[in-house]
Length: 278
Image (cartoon, rainbow, N blue to C red):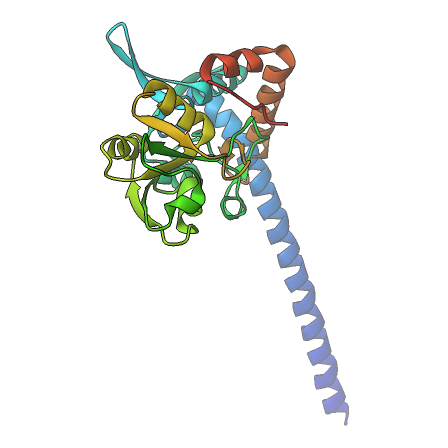
């Protein structure tokens, strides 16, 4: 009987010790994870400052947000998004490095830390929020149908049975997929889609309203807008979820631009017509 009691007591002591060690281990791991996250948040901004540059990913075929422009024989990437990126770099006290890539590659580049931020007229969506964070919105502008003159396309309903040009990975592509009877032709660059539209190889292209206005303004004899915008979605900067400190910097820059009046000046400079983000 005494032997049984001894083994029972020993078992209880071993069980309690294991439980305590397990809890302590979990606590240490949680503490380490939290500490690691905090260090990473600090390190992102510190790393940018130490490197002396902010690296952004963009897709420079999307006027007036970002596009190539030759000035004095030099090819530069310019646009509204680029001016915002320059303001962020200035706030951090560093240079700006722009990596031009396919639109669908930008979020993966942010997640893999190939770039620090993604700035390319990104619409805030629930699907994207699963993997990345967004800054405060910096402009509103829904998706808009562009068509060639004389196409007969006046609204989304007219696209049944028609071919729509879309840029891969965009909100415009997602909207086009839901249009009954429509066929999709996918492009890496939106400029290629618009070129196909002007050559009547597709009946419509769906892009952000400011971009649609830019293409129509530059090609008034060939292109026109069809109907009203298909949604009213805000644009924001893409940031990794763990980079809260960098997110705070970006949001401060957006607020400062608006408070100073510089935001309105930039928007009026780049956009045909505009609606500031509320």
